[in-house]
Image 1 (tube, each protein chain N blue to C red):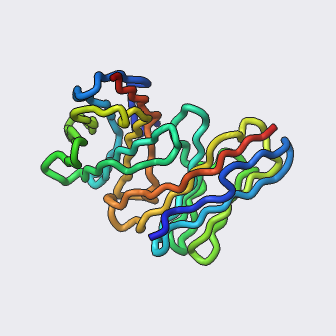
Image 2 (image 1 turned 90 degrees about the vertical axis):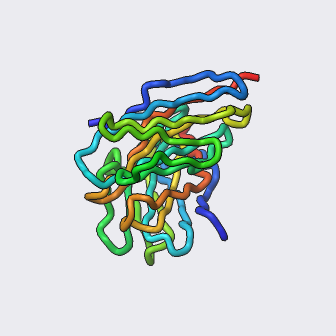
Image 3 (image 1 turned 180 degrees about the vertical axis):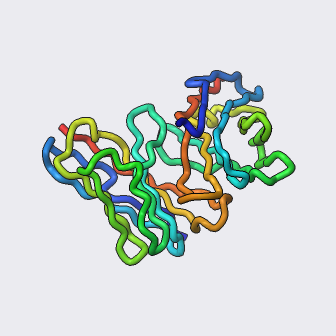
Length: 116
Length: 115
């Protein structure tokens, strides 16, 4: 079946502009995660959605970052007034849920954001 | 506090040799899961292996095995018979049994397999 998809694959934007990144999780996966990965670095957790529960936003670096998940499926990560330090690859992942620690995450290909 | 620690920024191994990538973790939960992911230069994250905290035996998946030492809170990845295609970044991750169940990742280890 289809995996996690993300769009766009690449985004170049000018400093100060807003951007929206989209994630389509695997059908039936109730958990959805956003991570940020700077060049050569590890994954920085941003936000986590589980079903209809309130999202865990503890990883969002500033109030310029927000995310929503409509209908328990597609998610959009929005970055307002982008800064150059926002340049990174933004990875989305989904998993079956939270009931078991064994549920691995399936990752999308990422969106490479470059802020000029 | 850092939940997952990978102390080796880079590792080299000769083709066909075995290599161990270190990972230590910190949790007060009794129930948790440990994961290893591979990220080749193409950027995708590939799930390799999982170890549950209650699993009595070390997990194995083909050439990958996880050396799980619960008392030491370590979950090292062992790759046997290294291949050139194993050159990649490797990330250790943990999901705790309590709380929101988000997965935390280590900083990664870049493995280079030499011909």
